[in-house]
Length: 180
Image (cartoon, rainbow, N blue to C red; front, side, top):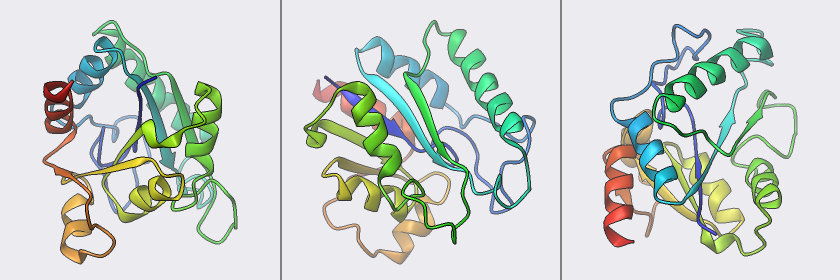
């Protein structure tokens, strides 16, 4: 089974250091919706795993988060596809949960939902070191995009040995589908 787990903010939609707090602020990155559609049509299962500590911080509600995901679903529906699932961590950095990346709880739940025991077949696309660290914890294949916090992650340079870098989700998708 071919599974791809995408981070949300900075990979699918624009990111902000001030958090994405409303449906209006949820703005897809150029080519990201089409890239997800291409992956789905090529037979990949596509999941999203996203830290959403803005909920714990009181910046927005879970209802608002679901409305953002409804907007994403509507955009994908225009291409005749939908994601296979969305996992999110509503906790803050001090909540000691098992789901907030760099912890791998969300990735493990996705693997379990998909019936995957060999995590080495899972591809994880993220824009921050914590996305990649969570992937490495479960022995998945981490991939970095330059969008969102990707350039900052690259500039720091730590923990990136051997991790492929792509301009954005569309570039990743193009390269992956060429190899298939």
